[in-house]
Structure formats: structure tokens, C-alpha cells
Length: 121
Image 1 (cartoon, rainbow, N blue to C red):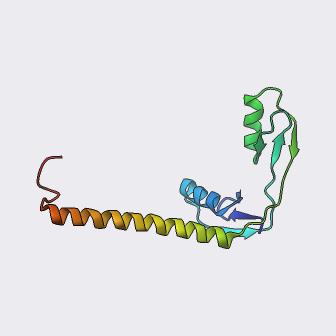
Image 2 (cartoon, rainbow, N blue to C red):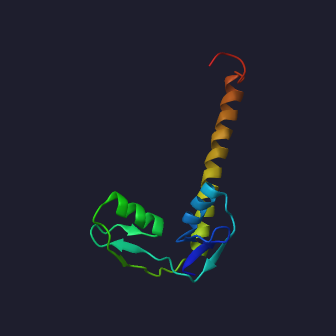
Image 3 (cartoon, rainbow, N blue to C red):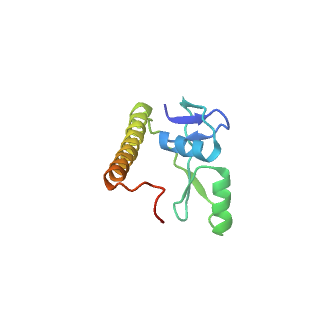
């Protein structure tokens, strides 16, 4: 696969992380691997890469004279299996940290004899 495609809006995403971010922002959760390439245009004046027409238009409006772009689309192969494993591992690490924090809090509450509702904070 070259990209992930959001089946809700058609946006092409370069990585599992981008798909996760897209999901958090939009609520879209229907993704599939695709062989479509993500088109990237690079400003010939400053080198800024622009992935969408809207991004290119904004760059041109904010930077008068930056009107020439060259396509620099590259075709990285996604390793979605590896990226998904890394995302799962990161989530498990977060879960382990939360569990350890809760365990320490319970132990402190039990040994301190002070309940959470007694005393002013």
C-alpha cells in the first residue's frame, strides 16, 4: 500500500498516525489501504511542501510571489502492520502507566488511613 484512504471523506493519509489524528479530529473511522499516491507539490521559492490545493492556495496568498510549484510526489510503501503494532504497543504502555498510578494511589490511601473524602484539598 502507498497510503491509507478515509472511506468517509476520501482523504489520503500517509501513515497510521495520520489516520489516528484524522479520526480524532473528524470522527471518521473507516480506512483502507490504497495504491493511490499522495500528490505533493513543493514551492519553488521556499521549498514548502503542499499536499492539497487549499494548502497551496493559502501558501500563495500568505506569500506573494510564491506561485510556482513542482511535483515531488514520492511513493513510500506503508508498513501498516508495523505501524499498527507500534500504535498498539504505545497504547498498552499508556494503559500500564495508568494502572500503575491507580495501584500506587490505592496503596497510599490504604496505608495512610486517610480517605479521599476526609480533609480539605
